[in-house]
Length: 180
Figure 1 (cartoon, one colour):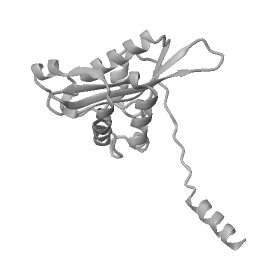
Figure 2 (figure 1 turned 45 degrees about the vertical axis):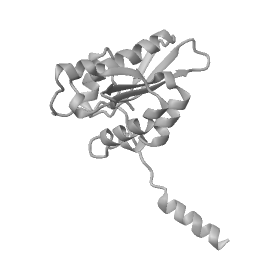
Figure 3 (figure 1 turned 60 degrees about the vertical axis):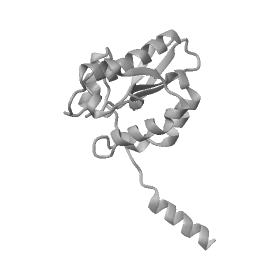
Figure 4 (figure 1 turned 120 degrees about the vertical axis):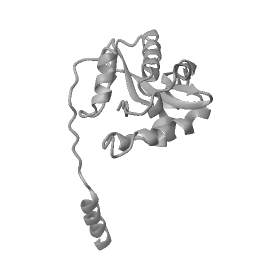
């Protein structure tokens, strides 16, 4: 789920904005990216997204698709990231790109860091033969939806999330197993 967290925080100065470097993520960035995601993808602001954010998500994407993992860095601090992958479907000539995560520190939002991350991500996808780029976010995440519309995405579709608590069924299953 691509998430663009927005807030009314102060903007960085023009010099700081220009000093942000977009680069490919390295193994040394894993911890910083994970912790930044922990700050951005929280239950109160992203009730469905935060459940999917964990250290395995970052590591799995990095180890499987390093070239689609980017960071924004300012003065040796990770201030943003974009993590994605590609999808090849059987019996389809089309290659799909999927931007799963996009996050930027609040004080760097609205200063083109997310746009620069996305632009670099999109160019990598173009060079790799991707024909369709996909993102998803929660239906009420208007900052993310508006951001992606500005980048050229269209045709938003709402998602429906259903949950099933298996705890009671699991307890009944354990009782049956203990009684056998």
